[in-house]
Figure 1 (cartoon, rainbow, N blue to C red):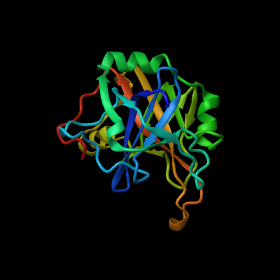
Figure 2 (figure 1 turned 45 degrees about the horizontal axis):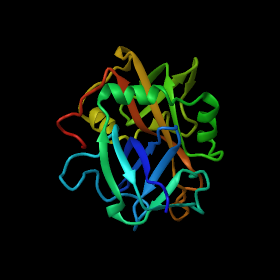
Figure 3 (figure 1 turned 90 degrees about the vertical axis):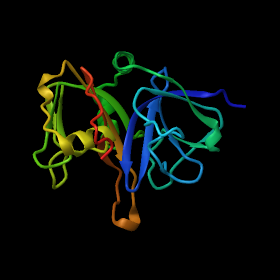
Length: 220
């Protein structure tokens, strides 16, 4: 029997009409747990209706490695074998979450490998700055003096982070006021039946210091 897997949730994102969740072990290994009966989770809440959010600690007792034949970059996936094998065992506060992230940051090579689906689909980085694209749920970011603007016909990377999509929808935001800015970059899966022939990058989580509270309208 496998040893229970413990992960700190770092990203909760909107994916079509469902949700995608990803986190890291204490050793900095990315894990994307998939539910038993689907590629995405049906809800963003627990049974008691509280929100699943970054900083939550999950223990997963029954799972297998999952390889997506259509999206080979998704090397971090595991399939949870039954819903009862996942439970929230702890919750990091804002300071603890930032400390966890700061100690497990990845470098620019890891970012580029993620952007190119080179054996991975998730990355955690510290950035110099974030620029929101006017009128869009998209951002550009600067790391080590280089601006990443994405290379599609629309500027910026789509933001799928539930919290920040809600913030962008209801508030104006300037990222210049923050002491530290962290991003989780993730790849969307290929969808050949919809004409999506490559895994493409998104910003799946924005973590800031100081922390930004969840807006009253969260998650919409």
